[in-house]
Length: 406
Ligand code: GLY
Image 1: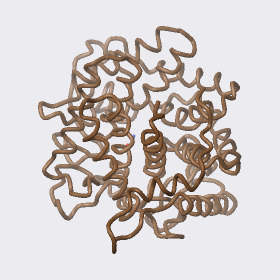
Image 2 (image 1 turned 180 degrees about the vertical axis):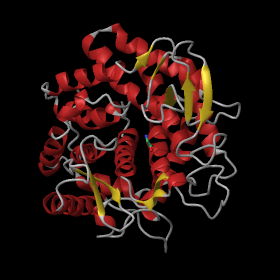
Image 3 (image 1 turned 90 degrees about the vertical axis):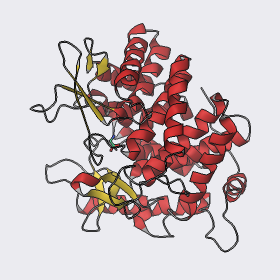
Image 4 (image 1 turned 30 degrees about the vertical axis):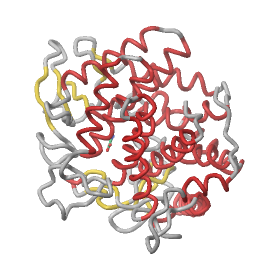
């Protein structure tokens, strides 16, 4: 169990200021300012919980996700796919500052998700539980979290289709898809590799490995971009169709999907040592970093093929996921220095141009993410997962710069 890093705040401020932009440019957001933002987010969330406790469907509002179209703070139920990111943000703040206040809040919001260990309505149990309970276990060593994570892994593998070699992502749109698998699903494998390490039960490893291999074979195009949704025949395991859901078109490259792939294959390489997964991560990094439509500040448009580029919204969440992934990839790859430099550049952009001004955005750290542009849903707004991967990237960068990363 890795111990909590009780790092002096001053060290982190120095770390962040090492990314600071040239004179005359805005300064990079400091850890102190991030803390102030998150205090505000906590207050605003508690207000919504008190004043508007239930959603239209009668579910309890618990976790801040984004800002609604009407300008109000969106506080979502525990079953929302993003519910694990807020507790995860609080855990990273505890890791980065060592302050008990963040730990207390993190414990509170993690506990709210306990019942989600049985929520097998989609693949997102991995996101919900590993970002919350996974970080709780990592940072506290509290063994009461182990059965919750084990049950979450059991829930996830119940969605595995042997004939396909993949975990089914979604159950909606059944008139269109039989077994839709989205590139995002790579992110859920970390929970399964953890379950294998914890229990010794090979089934978790085998399912995670098979999913990564099947995805590698079917999701990627010759230019190393990935399709968003691959739909499989549940009987034959054949690919039925390749589509998008949140991207511009079936044949386009949805930015967050590319970032999920980069992170997913980097993490899967760490947990399997399988060289093809490392190679895939490097290929994805190449696609992203060398793409002609990648802006100089390395914060991508929401889709690399969006028709109105350069007048299209950026997706900060994709950039934050990329930065965190590149900080891991640089430890494994011969191109490490290049990936590190690019990750540092992304962090500089996020921490300056895309960071909320003090008191802005209800306290979310970053603005300017895109949830689902084809539905005009959550366009150019903060998203809790952008904040999560931004903080994870700060933590990874800090460890990397001190030679203590992993
Ligand atoms: N996993 C859902 C999304 O990235 O929007």
